[in-house]
Image (cartoon, rainbow, N blue to C red):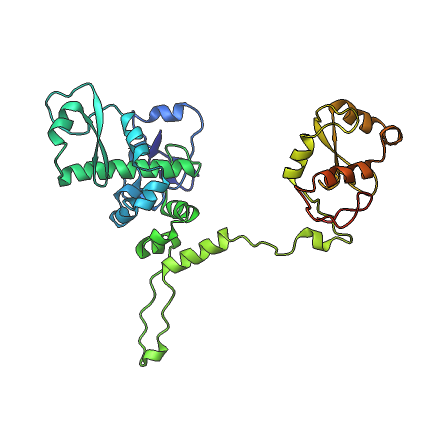
Length: 340
């Protein structure tokens, strides 16, 4: 509940009095209340209870083109979301004193949608009038302002200001739809004083408010990416692993080098100058192993090599067997490194 009250000030006593009336007295019986300045949006509002859904921006005719812009509507969720929002009201929006049906439906009418009962929908389906357009426009604006307020993290009773609405447009890449008059109000620019000049070359036009707003948006959302990677600043650049998923998948499909059972894992070499802290060896240096022998190798690499042979030589034999897959023209025999 929000109320707009006029204070009576007693400066000598340091007391401020409010006359809320009987209908608002219960607000002050609840304990503490929040007091805030009304702002420009509520300057013309009478004293008393403020409507929960009152949004001064909805009455600003200069924003009509922005509200009806297809890109703005789409960014807020589209007309389908507006239809779902209207269906929650369950009240026919066509005013008349006759009977209304209990079932409701949505009728699309420029620039938005209207919630009608089935009886009114049958009568108005093919009509296009200014009155219907006014209802559709009011629905569209109310839904847009509620959606924008929610996406900005405000509560339902928050009165959306023009700078906040402009920020939502800028944030969503819609700064180009902001008209000049709206940008001037949002930036609170003062009109330029009239200057009398004798020569046309002395005229120095100022930058339009829209360009100022777009320029500020670029500075806010611009991201500067360092072209140099952190590796270039290291004393010893971190090495990059050579990865080949196709090869490791092929190694996994081979037989275990120890027992000829189907391999479960492509084991990467341990030691021999390969790998390092927190890293694996290149995918070139892998061995097909079943789970049992893979665990045995990691439990004791020295004992494993004494029993089954050197890891490096076995990996060379593995990728030589994959010559058709990797290197059809191998430059060196099995005992030497293979060049891919």
